Length: 306
Ligand code: SF4
Image (cartoon, rainbow, N blue to C red; front, side):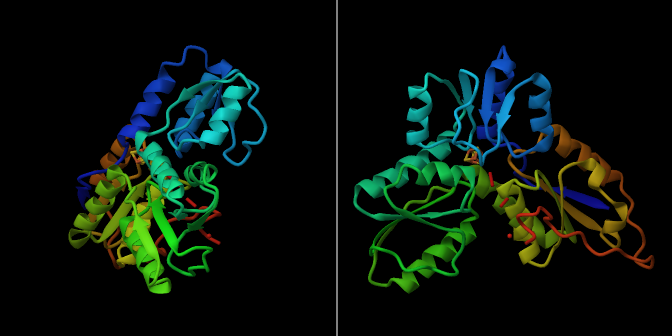
């Protein structure tokens, strides 16, 4: 089987920088990480082994017990930042600058008096941080349905890992629904997300199947899988090498490989090495059904994230 590696895949600079900061923390037992530093179970286990305290992304109301609090690359609202500082917490801030850019763009639109629309996954930690600082806003996960809005003076930003195609569809739907609206769109999709999505699109014409490596709750990873699936390419989303089943590759002659922005280089390398030596069963053998691209509880009834 021939294996084609995407031109852009795996760790983005935001995740790399966050992990560098984490690696330099001298006393992990004195630090609480608010939410998932990265949506990667292997990394999270490593953090647990080092003794970090971790709080679920959904339980941010209570104050962390430790004095030091780590803010993840997904960021937090200014309101939450002030609350933590007022409580005497010391912040170790790994917010990605491209997430900060989304916050500032949304706040600027709100200051102009616009009703802000955030294209992203409702409840996602990055989206939560953005909307908490806005007086009013609407979060749209997709172009359908577009709800009525309290104003026709509108501003649009995107969760940083939004697929460009999806953002364009939502903006088009807004323009169609409110043709009279004054709509200002600020493109806040991060370049690493764009690069990884485009690299998958570039691969598709030359592959029979695509393997996507990354956390099942990683939004950008799931979007890579979705991109290929929507174009009819057999797609396998796995978190690690052990999930590779040679039977899935029956009849596959050319396979693409990509990975989300929170996937360890070593995990990608392990999967790539296995793919390059994998011998798919001949097509005459009984096949198994292609594995669904994503199988997390959220995805299969409904996010994933960054
Ligand atoms: S995916 Fe984009 S916004 Fe998120 S950490 Fe990486 S570079 Fe930053």
